[in-house]
Structures are given as C-alpha cells and as structure tokens.
Amino acid sequence: MPRLRWPDLRNARDLGGLATAGGGRIRERALIRTDNHGRLDADGIAAVRAYGVSRVVDLRWEWEAARYPSPLAGDERYRLVPACFDLTGDEDIPADSYRLMLDASRERMAAALTAIAEAPPGGVVVHCHGGRDRTGVVVALALRLAGVPAEAVAGDYALTEASPAATMANTLAHLDAKYGGAEEYLIGSGLAQAHLTAIRSRLT
Image 1 (cartoon, rainbow, N blue to C red):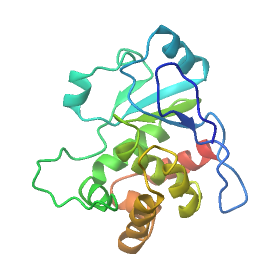
Image 2 (tube, rainbow, N blue to C red):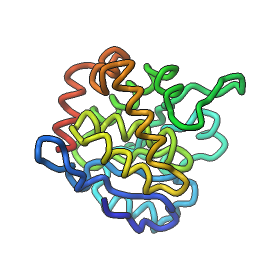
Image 3 (tube, rainbow, N blue to C red):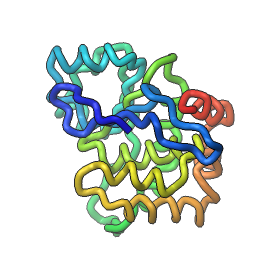
Image 4 (cartoon, one colour):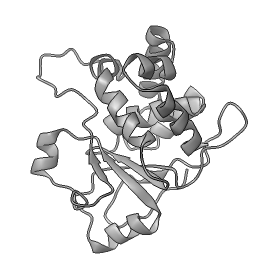
C-alpha cells in the first residue's frame, strides 16, 4: 500500500496492492485514504487531480466541514457524506473497537459506501479529520466487500499512527458476529445490491 507524498497531507495512502481471498489484489489508484484537506495548497490540489481522482468523499460532520472547509468543497469531485452520528458525550464508547460506530450509524455508513459505488471512473479519496476512525471503518467495509481478509484490513489500519491493529480486528469480529459480515451489514443498512457489485468491480 504505497504512501502518497501529496503536499501537506500527513496520512495519505493508496490501498492498491492488498491481496484478496480469491487470489486477486485491490487495484492501485482505486481507493485512497487520507487525513483532512484543510492544509492543501495549489500544489496539493494539483497532485490529487493528477492522480486521477474522480471523487472525494468527506466523512466529517457538517459542522466540521463548515468550520474547517475543504479547499475542494467547490469541486465537482467533492461530496460531504457524514459517516457517523455526532457524539453527545453520553455514549459509552469502547476504547478497543468501533462497534458503537457500526451499530449507531448504519444508514450513514451505507451512504458513504454508496458515494464510493456511484463515483465516476477513477480514484476515490475517503477522508475524515485525521484519517483514522471514520475513514478506517468506511475503508474497512469497502475492503471486506472486495474480499480482503480481516487480518490484512487490520494491518492496513495499523499503518496510521496510534492505530492498534487489535482495534480494527475487534471491530470486524463484531461486524461478523452481530451482522454476518460487511455485505449483510450494508444490505441491512440500505445499500443496494448493485452498489455492492459496483464497489467490488471498482476495487478488484
């Protein structure tokens, strides 16, 4: 998974090259994960465009995007698709997994995956603020749909600073135990079957 030296991004990498259970690999320049784009200058924006990016999926909350606007917000490639319910402070948030995010944000997760599925041909950039939590879960769902084993998904997650592989491994174990896996979770959350097919076709 090559790290991308896009100017002013600290956590950008292409998911291309990850092996799938069927013997294939995730395509390069198909799915890219980054941190927020607030620091991007003209050179950084040019690098994103030169990479063949056709869609930028911003997973932040509306208030985050308003307070810290993306320099790409006016671009036709940009979509704001908040992936998580906004925390009130009353939730018992587990420190070792994202199971609360999965359980409480099902429709939002389906909307984020729909944005990936419906993107024009080209690369899809997924980001939140730090490119770890919300980005990690959405990317994990996409990779599991494409057949990347859970251990490899957790290994990719761990490439982000302060992101123990066990956190994602526990999240995916919860996904399998409670919902039967990524496909069942997303269909039950409102994702269309055609979108599942589109994501697999895009990534592999």
